[in-house]
Image (cartoon, rainbow, N blue to C red; front, side, top):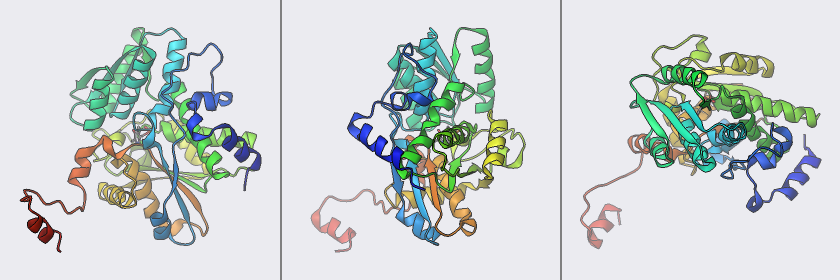
Length: 366
Ligand SMILES: *Cc1c(COP(=O)(O)O)cnc(C)c1O
């Protein structure tokens, strides 16, 4: 169903070059007012890319779109939540923020804290944070504590620290994070002029699936003919507490961004699944890597955790109804985790080549 009024309004008001950042663009829907200092790096307004290869693979006249949130300023959707969380922290007079992170939250927290002139502390699980993310946290000037434990243990500690000391917690238990992140759902509807039949999304702490659902529901109050999507959440089979309804003591997956055994938004996510008529499923690391490589062959490079949404889609091929419109959320940029890419690709990469025309022509098969 085409939402005409909405389409014309947004294409008129927000030509790409004038994009003001998501708080300014969607302030009517966000808990901000004139007193709120807006800390922004012009996040949001990320592309919704039609995937011809995936659409063909799914068949049945299905149209698959990729919401490429890896194009946010620090390379993941976490920027959407962080612009809100840091702006509100600043408004409330706080001077320092803290988070536990599998990497992307720390990168975003450090960047927005730097932008807003706040101190940031981050706790990360030693050895399980992708290189790019660690580089970001260090460069943006966070104080980084790498702990001999996993994400869930780190989160427990930062929750207590933020209760005891004047430090604002910016993990997705912070309600402003969800508020900022819901704008991704607005953007999808603004782009398509309808909501997709399915939204496929990876789940770690399940803040993002909660946020998208909130966004779709809020737009449906305004645009009464909006049909809400089924929310399809995917986890890695080695780290699938929501799929199996358990706590995973030692989560294990190549997709480090969703290596979480006890999601803080568990109850909210359950409600999303129920209200939307969606489903939660696990995909293996092999399926994740296959989807990761498949996407790159169409020119879209995301990080492994993001590819879980596409791995999940592919797994459900037989359940997709004819003419479906589906959005897969690509939560983070492939450059975040170069090690994973270098280890998992099918490229021809020849080394130690003598630099002569003759030799190279031969190597290339001419
Ligand atoms: C944080 C993150 C996730 C998981 O999001 P949740 O809100 O914790 O479910 C997925 N992919 C990437 C790249 C992330 O950084």
